[in-house]
Every structure is written in structure tokens, then in C-alpha cells.
Length: 317
Image (cartoon, rainbow, N blue to C red; front, side):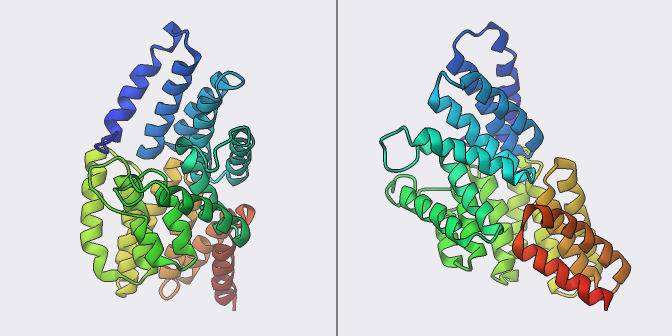
């Protein structure tokens, strides 16, 4: 895990799960499920991550609050990626209900990934007040733990960085994304950097960032990270006017995310694909935009809904 070798961790976690019928310690059983969810989530096996997390939650329910919250944390992460945002936020509410029984001021460390994911979810839904509350809690948590904050990439800061970037706070976003290749948080950090660079129009960073991210993905056997890189390179190609290459890369990104069940990510790639196709293939562009909108609307992904609708109205005119 600490070397970012999540493919190996995933395999080890599945072998560990084979021991469960012989185990009697409920906390050990719950931790086995949580580690399987952790590794599956990082690799990009989001459906499996949700199942593993749910199994851990059920084993720990009513017996071990820490293990219970740990399982909920990974289910928040997996449900968010699977575009079950209502389910993710319901799990976050349960985490906070249990955490309220604890006297500490800030959340437990193992639950921080859920808090930062919730910040991003509320930000995408346009709920600025709730997003800011989760951002504030997260920033205070890391600032009060200098041994973690800024020491290297963590599994909790990437969603926080993306939430900050969506608010236009790019310097702060990059500040919470220290990069150390072949580390536990490197893969997630590269995912977010692939989104933040285009938002900053930092196209000159594309080649080096894409190469480093693909190397990290190969080392960690990460299924999702190459799709973020495809999208980055597709956006760079579109910005450079190479629409044919942009379409190839963005279509590959969308199809890959669809296979992983990452429906919001798929829709985001389809929106960008539709935008790239508008000048050359209006019919195809309209289909991609409509498909993206069909995902964004029920999720309440505000800016993406507005962006897709604006293009579709322009196409129809």
C-alpha cells in the first residue's frame, strides 16, 4: 500500500478474504473487508469496492464503531464514483451520527476520505455552504497534523483538492497535493492533477504529467488512472485544434469509465467529447451531450448540466 502497489494489495486482500470462514474476531473480519474495499477503490474496481465495504459494515454494525465507520468511509468513496451520490451522502450522515458520540473535535483519521469526498459532492451539486463546511473541517484537520499535511500525498486530500479547484482556489488545491511517486496516495493525486491542469490552462504540463501518471498506473496496476490521462490528453488535443485525436482519446476515456461503472466520470468525458465534436460532427456531438446531460441532471451536477444544456440549445438552433 505505502509503495502504491495497489494491484498487489488487491490480490492480497482477496486472499485474506478467503480466511473469513475460519475467523471469529468480528473486528478482524470487518478490517479484512475494509482493506479489500480500500484496494479495489484505488485500482478502480468501484462496484467491488462497494460490495466489500458493505460486507464490512454489516459485520461491524452494533459491535465496533471504528470498524463500522471505516467501512462506511470506503462505501462513501465507492458510491460517489458509482454516481450514487444520495447513497454516499446518506453514509456520510451515518458517519457523522456515530462520530457525534466521540468527544474529539475533529473527525477520526480513517474517516477523512469520506469528509473530503462529501466536500466534492456538495461542490458539484452547487451547495456552496455545505461544501465550504466540509472543506473547512478538512483543512483544519490537516493543518493541525503537520506530520501528514504536506508530507506527501494522502488518500484523503485529492477530493479536497478537486473541491478547491472547482471553487477556483487553484493555489490551495495544489498545496494539498504534494506528489511523491510510488506512494500510497500517488495514483489518486495524479487523477486530480489531470483535472486541475486543464482547469488552469496549464497545457504545457500535459506531456510530463501524462507520462508520469501512466508510469504510476502501470506500477500500481491501476485501471482508472489511464482513463484520466486519456481525458487530459484529449482536452489538450482539443485545445491545440487536433479534434480528431481529441475525439479518439475522449471517447476511449468515456468508454473506459463506463466499463468501471464511474458514471459521472463517463458523462464528463462525453461532455468534453461533445464539445470537441461540435465544429465537425454536429449530430454526434449532440448525442454525446445528451447522454452526458442524462447523467448530470438526476445527480444535480449543476455546472455540468448548465454547460451541456447551453451547447444543446446552441446545436438545436
